[in-house]
Length: 207
Image (cartoon, rainbow, N blue to C red; front, side, top):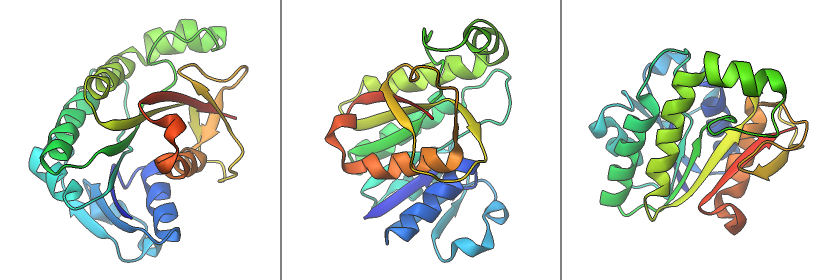
């Protein structure tokens, strides 16, 4: 399989690259700085550029079978990264006749009754409101297409190990679920590429 990964130098992105290569897939990764990629990832196709640049996105996606978006801002201020990059992804996929895409959003992109009080009433609506607002715009852009998408809403991300032991739930986090490792988010995304149960679904993911 030919795999395009946007945000390849981030925590989830690096794991996506590693797992895809482990599976024998051909990988193309879009990164802003190739020096941030670990040297032990081996030979992959690297496109150095910005997901806000339509040409860089198209160069990364062209010729691939599936697209993974693992973009992240690294901050809490006002942003349009997710929605703008998603518009670029949708355009490039449409022009190149690519159908399958999996994208990382976040738990709390919509009010989640399964979250604990602190997350639901303080962290999400105040601390992360700007990021979540744009993530929700990203989700709506995918939902308005006929693409074969899966939107993944992980809980609080950690640097824990890849275990393969996690819970997935429709839209809202599993009961009492709070966190998940970046490694396991990547594990889930690669696992469900051909899982019809996740097609045009929004899946919340925690331990």
